Length: 185
Image (cartoon, rainbow, N blue to C red; front, side):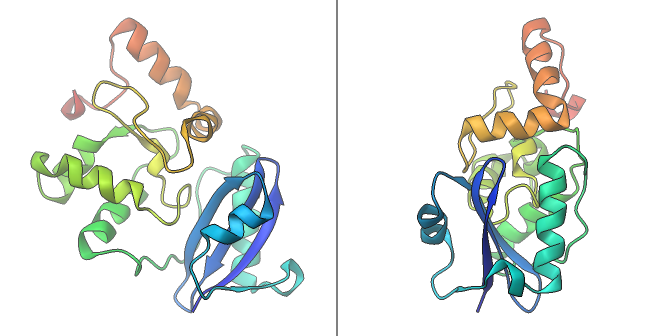
């Protein structure tokens, strides 16, 4: 069973939830509190912000700092148990991508089993229940286009702008020089 807090961020309504093992979900910005509530795992218990656990409060502080551009990494226990073994492998690989770096679906696929897994990687990235904390926004298409994002491309652009990589991506496409590692080209 998950416990969750719903809060208003500078980007809109969001939520964080946890299990006994760690943070298990982050709901990306929505226009209303009700829309966020609909995204939470069925059976989640909503806590008033003042009754949030120390771990949820820490996650909220770190997320708020990240969105303000004053934090570049997260120090939180994560519960990845919602995913299949393949999805968990992909999500752990995403966690190895540092702030300010971009990688392709193919780059991830090479690390989880081989180039032929690129489409499956895309599906696993799209199923990530903790975007931002498990940084799926740092994954772009091989041709350096943005690819997809569960929170929508405007949100992905904002996240990449915070990290300074959206400008790199645009320069790379214009100049045909790659900001991605050589094995991604």
